[in-house]
Length: 209
Image 1 (cartoon, rainbow, N blue to C red):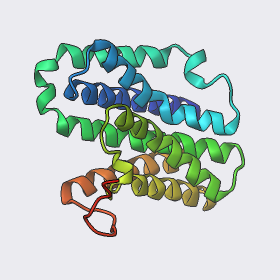
Image 2 (cartoon, one colour):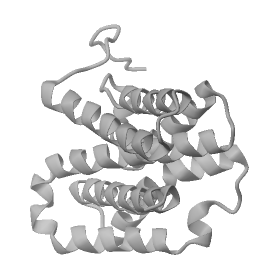
Image 3 (cartoon, helix red, strand yellow):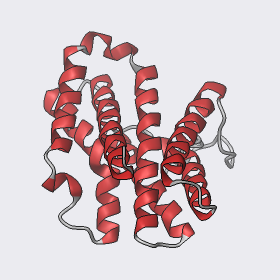
Image 4 (cartoon, rainbow, N blue to C red):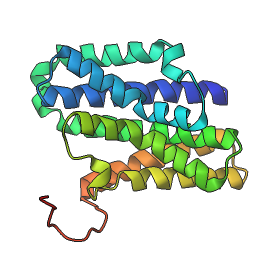
């Protein structure tokens, strides 16, 4: 399997995982099937869309490759067909979200490396690609975006992206670096959820204004 084949496979995997997390979130918010599709699509392609716009790559990827829309449709149908289990799907939502985070962090960071960007820019691009869809999903679902509320989410993405950049700098084969970044980002996110790791904040009081 070539690097391009691996990246495309991971891209489809991440798209479907994020689409499932979006559809699950919509189901838990009692949205109808159209709302589930919208949230699935926004979650699946949001980060990549922001990435492409930053890089000036237009039209954005999902407008020229219908497979991404198809994956969002499949995720919506799957969740809708299993809606009786949606209320108990919080764990699955978090797992799919972690997988999507890991995959899209890889895609964004590797694209930055291929474009010849500097280390910091590659890491930032990977993070934006990784967290963008989940951020948009939470905003549209009227939920607190996890990236803004002490959870180790963006930091997991930054850590994975930095690992990929570092391995690339050391001359490690790209396939190894890509897989390591994906596994590291996903694992950090899942471990933080399991053990309750959080980012230090300024206290528990929230603004009311």
